[in-house]
Length: 81
Ligand SMILES: [Zn+2]
Image (cartoon, rainbow, N blue to C red; front, side, top):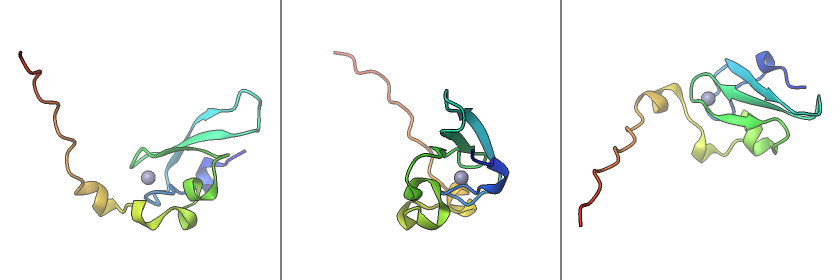
């Protein structure tokens, strides 16, 4: 069982991680979510998805990265034929 209070976000290293869901068979896996960048992972995934030290550097984020992230573009109006 994961202890969310002992876990940091693999992507942004934030220390507030929430337990979102647990496996139907108790104790097999948990789903955790970062309170800052909203990254979500299942504890049974490999270390490169679940541990900060193994998370690919190219995808790591800092608080500054999140603050300055560009806005998701709006969906343009539908084309008329
Ligand atoms: Zn995060």
